[in-house]
Length: 172
Image (cartoon, rainbow, N blue to C red):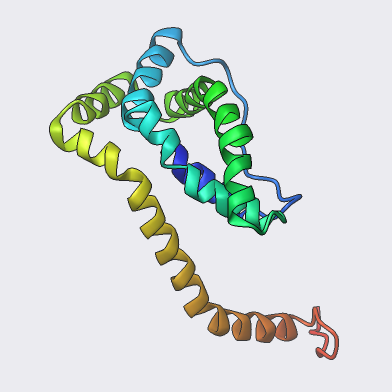
């Protein structure tokens, strides 16, 4: 997952929410972890470009947390957020590499890395921030479109099970 995608998702998480974490297991084989780290680094593309692609979304995040003036939010992003993210970028790559190494084997990782070394793979890596925005907007639109139907069905199911106020209790 691209760093920008991860941060877009982070911006959507409500304070106090806990993101699902993979179950801890034995440490991946160091050779596999090395291949995974190289693959993840290729998938991220150019470090500076990846980080700079996150500046605008981070301004939006600053505004969501209360810094309403765009100019002030931009200053905070440039002075605090971006340098912090840049300083910890390798830590993210290591976390992602461990995740990839738990799910994919060496052959798959090498094939993925080979693809990202091609011109098409490099174009995909460069396009990921824009694609992530498009995918996120599409998912939000889709969820909003099915939410009313889902809400009605959930209310009915809760009532049918006798779990809500005013619901008839079902015999056991």
